[in-house]
Amino acid sequence: MGEEVNSGHIVVMGGSAGSYTPLVSVLKRLSPGFSIPIIIVLHRLRNVESEIDKLLSMALGRDKIKEPEDKENIQPGYIYLAPRNYHLLVEENGCFGLDYSELVDYSRPSINITMQSVASVYQENVTGVLLSGANSDGASGLLSVSRHGGTAIVQSPATCEYATMPQAALNINTKALILSPEKIAVVLNGLSAKI
Amino acid sequence: MTEEKNISNDELKELQELVLYRYGYDFSQYSKASFVRRVLRFFEVAGVASFYDFKYNLVNNKEFFAFFLENVTVNVTEMFRDPSFYRGLREKVLPALATYPVIKIWHAGCATGEEVFSMCILLEEAGLLSRSIIYATDINPKNLDQAKKGIIPLTAMKEYIQNYHLSGGRQDFSSYYTARYDNVLIKKELRKNIVFSQHNLVTDYAFNEFQLVLCRNVMIYFEKELQNRVMHLFYDSLPSGGYLALGIKESLLFTDVRWKFETVDAASKIFRRKT
Ligand SMILES: C[S@@+](CC[C@H](N)C(=O)[O-])C[C@H]1O[C@@H](n2cnc3c(N)ncnc32)[C@H](O)[C@@H]1O
Image (tube, chains in turn brown, orange):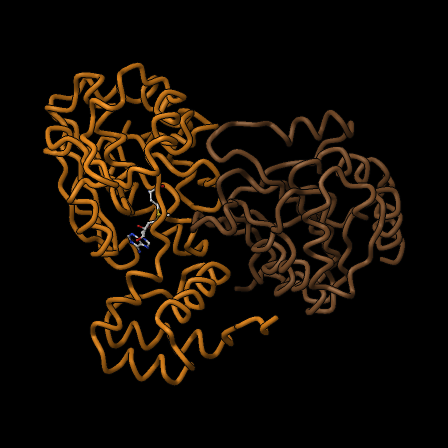
């Protein structure tokens, strides 16, 4: 209430087994001025602490990579990482909401849930990216991105360590672009140039 | 593929008003994204055919509302969720609690009790359980009924045992329960100082003073203004020096009582009322 409704562009990425390397490969290639917020959902152990945010910071040599807290505003220039053991949602007023509800397809965070939530709030201003993984999470989320008019991208199965996840998304989504990590970065940089 | 189901903003508002006027529960300040997910999930579970169908049942059928209430809140919980948090409690909070002759603790939003049982285990191991009173409250009566039984599904135990050890627990975890078929029963002696009762953080007031209040993963379902109200309620329930524990990704940042608390353990989200 009284807060700005966020209508800028947003990127949401999901990945599971074998997704860390392509993820770094995409993020490394982003132009220095890339300021569109990026939300990343990776499958990880629920009650074991892991410091993927710090790992990514080191691999990319940059800051502004963080796990959001509940009700934190989504800000340009930041890379957000879904915290372990929560589903990550976005609210209409442009902040994050955390949700500790049932596992979805054995996962919490669930890629589907975050992608659906982002798509329903940001509509066509979403670029969704699904990377390597050995399950089918993300398929319906990415479809939701397409249905709301956003751009859906899957990592080309040939470049995936585990192609099950991108393949599952492709099976139900004819609009998705199929790209290597290098090309995904090109598309994302293109977005940034347009704005 | 079926179309994605949704509910319009107007329908949502109508639903909230109906539930408030007919049954006295106010969900109008629950975070929209998760609340809508819950409502849609309920429609599915209850086989609701249309919004009209839903309204009709809600108005005319008390049991239908009870079922709605059971399902609309997120009731998920775990024993020793976030092991590092429990380590923080052991090391930084329990030694201070030990100085009180009677220790009063409040779990606000206790769900089916797993967090409360974990606390009882910590207190027992610190030799404090016998002089502790643990108030466990929730909006959802179904959760409280379940919590009072002290029963936990066996399938979850493997993870809880692991959590317990990660939290610094050194005992044989299986000494705290007895296995019965597909469930375990938490030992009665561990549960005897727990007082369960219904309390709604949205509309009810402070009811006692506690040395420690825990409210974890409950306020994530509230919008900022409601979070603020509830934080005042907790402030009023704590003496100076009293402890407050929130979920690992929750903060005091958006509330106007933030200046009145100091941080005890930043990563575990444990705070302390200043004066
Ligand atoms: C996700 S569970 C958290 C359980 C436990 N604290 C934990 O972290 O594992 C959320 C609980 O908050 C309760 N709750 C939701 N709204 C509430 C309200 N207005 N007043 C009290 N409890 C509420 C729900 O019924 C549910 O049991």
